[in-house]
Image (cartoon, rainbow, N blue to C red):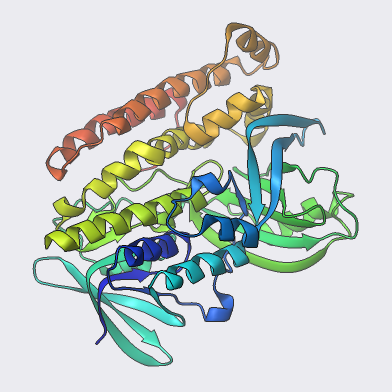
Length: 454
């Protein structure tokens, strides 16, 4: 029966950064990854991030960039309006990156192993161990047909969206967020396309609305290799993602002669981060805790930070001999006062979107100035000067009621950010914090008439 200080379930971004952090602090840590070593790092992903500075400085970031960053010149976005056929250009205030997701995944696991973590591939975790006091004490898994048990002082759940571990743990008496439904998630599918001729927009990420609430993307790893994908909210009518992507690609003269070199699908959270992602002996990070921007689906930087913080708090708790919920609580506050507040605010625009049809959303969104739109979808804030506001009004004749809703949602997003900035420093004040947060959310439902999401 292997025994470790920390067991990390899942070898994606959150799991690898958690393991690297724990190992660099000198504790015994093992990563249990269900994929075989040859498949490590192969995950359905859009591949676009803001840059290397977004990652915790716990692994060799120069090596990571050299090995996996294939296009570091992303300086603009292109919004394709299917109603008008026009492209709306958005200049970014910082340069972004498109990476090779498989090589990126291999590198972060290599780095975790170099720092001292043990990686066990082909290990499928299917249950948890929990004592009579409710503390998670380890996991059970199957490897090469044999049942294995791993004991640990702390288990870090980095097992991805709708993690099976959370179905196995008894969270009664804990604050861990169990208000989770598949309707709070997105279904996504992507293909890697190899083109015979380079595209002219290899410095841009391209996106467009889909028939259902969601979006299509073209992200260039290089001028001739494009990550093309599509996703939709599971709260909406189902969409055949493979067919939808095929139709879009076939209708694009630059892409229709492409060769598909890889294809993969996945579910990802398009919801606010879990209100609490800790329980006695247990923390969740990355997709397993809703650490994804709910409007864009971007989850790599948040998962890296969350995995790093989860391991750091786990190491601190283990050193103190106390792995209770209260002892791990600081992890929650770290997440919520950093990217958590922005993602929670951005989720309000998702909720607002469910109350309107796609055509109307396209008209309104395409009228909002590009950088302000990027700011809103990434951080929850939407700020327009007087002249810009007038131009936006002129461009949205017929949709002023919807635009007014959007600005009222913006005000609620600002209030929500303020609420997350005062996330409680201990579990005792957590219920009061939730009540005030829910009052803000109720305002949102009343403004736009959307169905409650939580």
